[in-house]
Image (cartoon, rainbow, N blue to C red):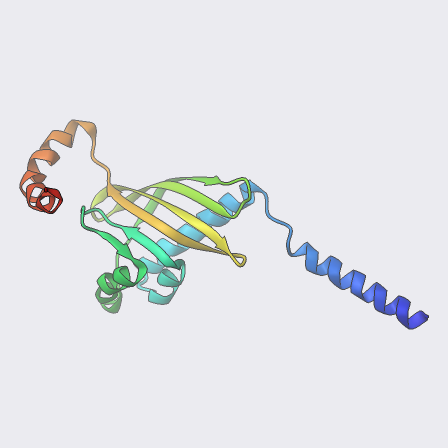
Length: 171
Protein backbone atom coordinates (compact mmCIF):
# COMPACT_ATOMS: atom_id res chain seq x y z
CA UNK A 1 0.00 0.00 0.00
CA UNK A 2 2.89 2.37 0.79
CA UNK A 3 4.28 1.77 -2.71
CA UNK A 4 0.94 2.67 -4.29
CA UNK A 5 0.76 5.89 -2.26
CA UNK A 6 4.37 6.72 -3.17
CA UNK A 7 3.69 6.09 -6.87
CA UNK A 8 0.49 8.18 -6.82
CA UNK A 9 2.30 10.98 -5.00
CA UNK A 10 5.10 10.89 -7.57
CA UNK A 11 2.61 11.01 -10.43
CA UNK A 12 0.83 13.94 -8.80
CA UNK A 13 4.08 15.87 -8.28
CA UNK A 14 5.30 15.16 -11.81
CA UNK A 15 2.00 16.17 -13.39
CA UNK A 16 2.01 19.40 -11.33
CA UNK A 17 5.52 20.16 -12.60
CA UNK A 18 4.53 19.39 -16.18
CA UNK A 19 1.40 21.52 -16.02
CA UNK A 20 3.39 24.48 -14.65
CA UNK A 21 5.22 24.61 -18.00
CA UNK A 22 1.91 25.07 -19.82
CA UNK A 23 1.02 28.30 -18.02
CA UNK A 24 0.90 31.06 -20.61
CA UNK A 25 2.64 34.34 -20.08
CA UNK A 26 0.68 37.54 -19.65
CA UNK A 27 0.40 39.90 -22.62
CA UNK A 28 2.96 42.40 -21.27
CA UNK A 29 5.58 39.68 -20.84
CA UNK A 30 4.85 38.41 -24.36
CA UNK A 31 5.32 41.95 -25.71
CA UNK A 32 8.71 42.15 -23.96
CA UNK A 33 9.65 38.74 -25.39
CA UNK A 34 8.68 39.88 -28.91
CA UNK A 35 10.71 43.08 -28.56
CA UNK A 36 13.78 41.04 -27.61
CA UNK A 37 13.05 38.54 -30.41
CA UNK A 38 12.82 41.30 -33.05
CA UNK A 39 15.93 43.14 -31.79
CA UNK A 40 17.83 39.84 -32.04
CA UNK A 41 16.40 39.17 -35.52
CA UNK A 42 17.57 42.54 -36.81
CA UNK A 43 20.94 42.02 -35.07
CA UNK A 44 21.33 38.65 -36.81
CA UNK A 45 21.08 40.46 -40.17
CA UNK A 46 23.56 43.14 -39.11
CA UNK A 47 25.96 40.41 -37.92
CA UNK A 48 25.31 38.28 -41.03
CA UNK A 49 24.21 35.41 -38.80
CA UNK A 50 22.35 33.48 -41.48
CA UNK A 51 21.12 30.65 -39.23
CA UNK A 52 19.75 32.90 -36.46
CA UNK A 53 18.08 35.17 -38.99
CA UNK A 54 16.33 32.51 -41.02
CA UNK A 55 15.59 30.13 -38.13
CA UNK A 56 13.46 32.94 -36.68
CA UNK A 57 11.13 32.56 -39.68
CA UNK A 58 8.58 29.77 -39.99
CA UNK A 59 8.94 27.38 -42.92
CA UNK A 60 5.92 29.01 -44.59
CA UNK A 61 7.01 32.60 -43.83
CA UNK A 62 6.55 35.39 -46.36
CA UNK A 63 8.81 38.44 -46.63
CA UNK A 64 7.42 41.46 -48.46
CA UNK A 65 10.08 43.97 -49.50
CA UNK A 66 9.94 47.58 -50.59
CA UNK A 67 9.53 46.96 -54.35
CA UNK A 68 6.15 45.93 -55.75
CA UNK A 69 7.49 42.63 -57.07
CA UNK A 70 9.16 41.68 -53.77
CA UNK A 71 6.85 39.13 -52.17
CA UNK A 72 8.99 36.15 -51.29
CA UNK A 73 8.51 32.78 -49.69
CA UNK A 74 11.16 31.98 -47.11
CA UNK A 75 13.02 29.88 -49.69
CA UNK A 76 12.95 32.72 -52.26
CA UNK A 77 14.05 35.26 -49.65
CA UNK A 78 16.94 33.01 -48.65
CA UNK A 79 18.00 32.89 -52.31
CA UNK A 80 17.90 36.68 -52.55
CA UNK A 81 19.60 37.26 -49.18
CA UNK A 82 22.31 34.60 -49.04
CA UNK A 83 24.91 36.59 -51.06
CA UNK A 84 24.59 39.47 -48.57
CA UNK A 85 25.06 37.15 -45.59
CA UNK A 86 27.97 35.40 -47.33
CA UNK A 87 29.78 38.76 -47.64
CA UNK A 88 29.70 39.09 -43.85
CA UNK A 89 27.15 41.91 -43.53
CA UNK A 90 23.57 41.80 -44.69
CA UNK A 91 21.72 44.95 -43.57
CA UNK A 92 21.42 46.92 -40.39
CA UNK A 93 18.02 48.09 -39.15
CA UNK A 94 17.83 49.93 -35.84
CA UNK A 95 14.44 50.06 -34.17
CA UNK A 96 13.22 53.53 -33.24
CA UNK A 97 9.88 52.34 -31.83
CA UNK A 98 7.72 49.24 -31.91
CA UNK A 99 4.09 48.45 -31.07
CA UNK A 100 3.20 44.84 -30.31
CA UNK A 101 -0.32 43.42 -30.11
CA UNK A 102 -1.24 40.03 -28.65
CA UNK A 103 -4.29 37.95 -29.55
CA UNK A 104 -6.65 36.56 -26.90
CA UNK A 105 -5.14 33.06 -27.01
CA UNK A 106 -1.62 34.53 -26.72
CA UNK A 107 -0.33 32.40 -29.59
CA UNK A 108 -0.23 35.12 -32.27
CA UNK A 109 1.19 38.62 -32.21
CA UNK A 110 1.34 41.35 -34.79
CA UNK A 111 3.48 44.45 -34.65
CA UNK A 112 4.59 47.57 -36.41
CA UNK A 113 7.98 49.18 -36.02
CA UNK A 114 9.71 52.34 -37.14
CA UNK A 115 13.27 51.67 -38.31
CA UNK A 116 16.41 53.62 -39.09
CA UNK A 117 17.97 51.92 -42.14
CA UNK A 118 20.40 52.58 -44.98
CA UNK A 119 17.26 53.64 -46.95
CA UNK A 120 16.39 56.20 -44.28
CA UNK A 121 13.28 55.83 -42.15
CA UNK A 122 11.35 52.65 -42.88
CA UNK A 123 8.37 50.88 -41.39
CA UNK A 124 8.28 47.18 -40.69
CA UNK A 125 5.26 45.17 -39.71
CA UNK A 126 4.68 41.53 -39.19
CA UNK A 127 2.94 38.56 -37.67
CA UNK A 128 4.49 35.96 -35.38
CA UNK A 129 3.05 32.66 -34.21
CA UNK A 130 4.03 30.70 -31.14
CA UNK A 131 4.77 27.22 -32.50
CA UNK A 132 5.59 24.59 -29.88
CA UNK A 133 6.65 27.25 -27.38
CA UNK A 134 8.82 29.14 -29.87
CA UNK A 135 7.94 32.42 -31.60
CA UNK A 136 8.39 32.41 -35.38
CA UNK A 137 7.87 35.09 -38.00
CA UNK A 138 5.01 34.20 -40.36
CA UNK A 139 5.06 37.44 -42.34
CA UNK A 140 7.26 40.52 -42.41
CA UNK A 141 6.56 43.63 -44.48
CA UNK A 142 9.16 46.35 -45.03
CA UNK A 143 8.18 49.71 -46.48
CA UNK A 144 9.96 53.00 -47.00
CA UNK A 145 8.33 55.77 -44.99
CA UNK A 146 7.70 58.79 -47.21
CA UNK A 147 6.82 62.16 -45.67
CA UNK A 148 3.50 63.43 -47.03
CA UNK A 149 5.20 66.57 -48.40
CA UNK A 150 7.47 64.34 -50.54
CA UNK A 151 4.86 61.91 -51.88
CA UNK A 152 4.34 63.72 -55.20
CA UNK A 153 8.09 63.72 -55.91
CA UNK A 154 8.23 59.99 -55.21
CA UNK A 155 5.18 59.34 -57.41
CA UNK A 156 6.83 61.26 -60.23
CA UNK A 157 10.13 59.40 -59.75
CA UNK A 158 8.51 55.97 -59.93
CA UNK A 159 5.97 56.57 -62.73
CA UNK A 160 8.09 54.97 -65.46
CA UNK A 161 8.87 51.80 -63.46
CA UNK A 162 5.28 51.53 -62.24
CA UNK A 163 4.02 51.67 -65.82
CA UNK A 164 6.29 48.76 -66.76
CA UNK A 165 5.31 46.75 -63.69
CA UNK A 166 1.57 47.31 -64.11
CA UNK A 167 1.55 45.98 -67.69
CA UNK A 168 1.36 42.44 -66.34
CA UNK A 169 -1.96 43.27 -64.65
CA UNK A 170 -3.68 44.74 -67.69
CA UNK A 171 -6.10 42.57 -69.68
